[in-house]
Length: 372
Image (cartoon, rainbow, N blue to C red):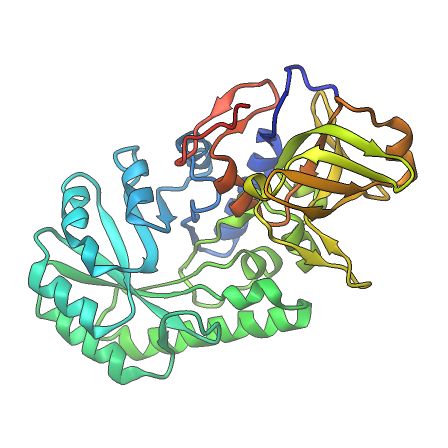
């Protein structure tokens, strides 16, 4: 472990150079395809990383909650979109934030639309979220009755303004390459159909898609106007398995202290568990579980092993690494190893703070740092 600052407890490291390369690659793709990039900040949740994002021409961001929108408010964003089915219990909080920050929200039913029509005090724009096959949330793409009922209600208000249609194809995170292509084509076809059907009445309507796998892997978006992926800023082992990125594109690693070594079992016990990484897991071809992959920390980041060791199990604070022969020969109690996460969004959320490779702290919405 050769980082130029001491680490004594689980610490989330970020490589700014890798993160910026990921941002540039997606921004270049958007520009090449005539798209507007509206990245989702549920992954980094950081004002400082937001300043990096502005360097790539981004004017608007996406968040997953009103609390997150408030965190980023008044930081120079033209608009903040809250990409979660709007909770009508938060209308008073929406009013408070809308006083100082232009916002858009996501609607999926007539009930919430009506409550907004009746109670809104400030102008708010909205997307109708469309379910084109994921099945988690959204209006079914063929449910024109519901779509038009929502539009009629919004048209009766001088505060609620229709922006367009939004699709997040979350099932892309569980698909093989050919399945991803099918999902991407379904997204394009659904948004094209909706635009063709409603753009005479709403000539300025926008279509947006937001999942990292299809946004990363394909380079033709038809008549889609905007893309809003989030995980691409950091990537992770899940995205590497899908094919969205290479392991060397993963921009964060959890530094974990070695507290015990069982040479006869080829296992290393580290201080790093579910409260640091979450318990997201990848299942190998043999049925084995992987909760993260070991990397060797160096002065300028980390090095990826050709024959990787991996976290085979985790509990709340503990992690057990199944080590290869090379690692077992080198590792000592008191060393610090790096772990590439299975799901970077969850790891960042668990840790609540980042450190760059010089030891400088970067903010996070959660604002926590584990000190023991």
